[in-house]
Image (tube, rainbow, N blue to C red; front, side):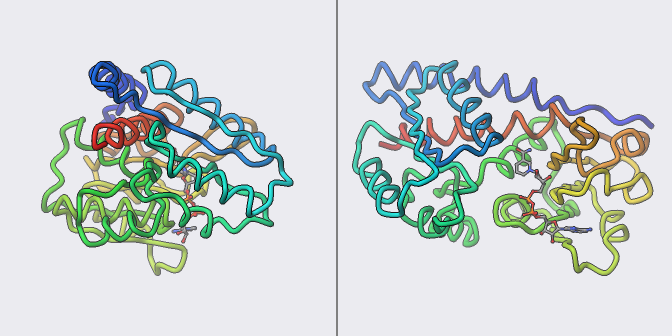
Amino acid sequence: MTARIIDGKGIAAEIRKELAQKVADLTVQGKLPGLDVVLVGDNPASAVYVRNKEKACREIGINSTIHRLSEATTREELLGLIDRLNRDTTVHGILVQLPLPSHLDEDEVINAIDPEKDVDGFHPINAGKLQVGDADGFVPCTPAGVLELVKRQGAAIQGQQVVVVGRSNIVGKPAALLFLRENATVTICHSRTKDVAAECRRADILIAAVGRPQLIKKDWVKPGAVVIDVGINRVDGKLVGDVDYEEVRQVAGAITPVPGGVGPMTIAMLLKATVEAAARE
Ligand code: NAD
């Protein structure tokens, strides 16, 4: 069997098109969606991510402002800016690009964002809403993109075995909770799991969010499973996922490529959350 390739790039483009229409409708109603992104310091990867977010916003008509602050920004200056954005009614979404320079406390900064504007879904109020099954909160964009990909390519979720490898607060844990909310039977594996391969082999839907290049091999995957690879690893100047793509595509039913799978969905979900925040106003 050769797996069907899940075209994340194409699906993300479809979502952006749907959102562009919603933005146009909201703009007519005088609710032009606004996303403000705060970038502190000169991390080159962060600068690229922020530029991509700005471009994606512009393409669908969202008003995006980037606040580029110096590495030497103080805690008070940063919290002051967040307070101002919290009170600005033209700003619907606030995103602080992580990581922050080491003198700034990321938790304190995230906690300062108004949960109603926390389109990244990192605020404890939104994490708590996901935990208790309250669909009103914002959800971290990458796992939201994973769920959307699985749904749009038509896989059943209810009652299925979903195995998530990785338990980070931004990907693994929220992905597990999202699939639990969809009535899947969910297993979370992590670095201390005894036999990760055996757990993975039970999965109807396998989600890899580990950060270890090509960790997941062909004999870890149940024939016909849906395999979603969140990993982004640079090996010899090339991007590879956490799944050994060439091997695993021989047994999986469907698989996401890296790049072109989950990556484009993350930004699409950020745009979606911003449009929702504006619509709720
Ligand atoms: P993280 O380092 O915070 O978490 C990794 C998790 O993997 C941990 O919970 C750890 O326990 C687990 N783990 C580590 N080694 C393991 C092993 N051998 N077996 C089982 N579990 C193991 O990473 P993260 O932020 O969750 O990111 C995971 C990957 O996803 C990275 O490659 C990252 O670049 C990528 N990522 C991609 C996107 C995207 O938009 N596509 C977004 C966020 C993260």
